[in-house]
Length: 367
Ligand SMILES: *Cc1c(COP(=O)(O)O)cnc(C)c1O
Image (cartoon, rainbow, N blue to C red):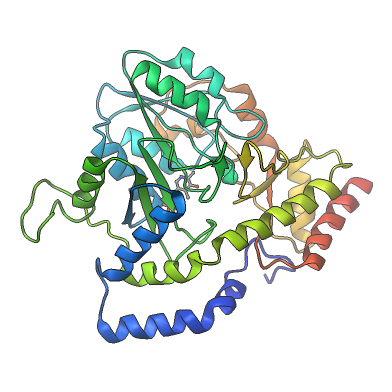
């Protein structure tokens, strides 16, 4: 089906950078520069500058960014990691794969971890807190920072959805021991397939992560440990270096679209995401997620109207039997799962398309 308004339009995005990207492709294909070459190094430097951190390590995916981080930090059997059940499955996989146990706190109405409920979950087994900056909005990091210091525990930020987001003037990914980012096509900055990276200010940890992503080698054929093949491709890095220059503009465009949604939908029965602010929260709107008590009906209505909407994370992760997580009940998490609907939001969306989405929502409630 050809959507009247697709959820995201990567073809339009390509058009903007076509000349530059095609010439980068030719350069790299001609030189055969594919694995850990200069474009990866440049991307890591560019991204470290952007986030204002000491180190960025390019890896295969956001999932690998999380796996390598939990492994490098020694998260393992007997450890607990405090996190949220309202996230993508990879967040929890990076904890359980290392043999540790995720401990859940309920979320708030901005979809993020209720930070004031974290302290009561801390035990002597707690090794880390893993906040997820969902939909491009930062968690309240000041509270977590304080807890991490007080109890001497680590913070691992799952910032996969929140590149560029800030809390109190500091970018996400620069608060914790590590920040884990994804470059998947549905994220604010994306390459041509899978990709990810890790940010940290810790020199030793950065070196360990570089070794882990490249088969345990620091120097070729000198294996210091068993590692992984989890390198960010040089071709992907070159694409990212071009697209990174347009990131801020794209984020600002998405914030402008969110502002229109917030203003023009304010009189509907919908619960809208918190308004963007420049003071405490600088949101990037990786997704624009509305809540409705008639969610299932609204979902069908909008799709029939040609608008590609999604019910992302419509079930708490502890309710998937195959994941074998402890049974629990988190009332806000469950309520939000029943109500969420993600609307199209992408920089290339024009005013007419935004109006069509807004008018369709008004029509639904006038029926
Ligand atoms: C996308 C995402 C990931 C995983 O990233 P990939 O690059 O797809 O592996 C992890 N956590 C969250 C919250 C995500 O949204």
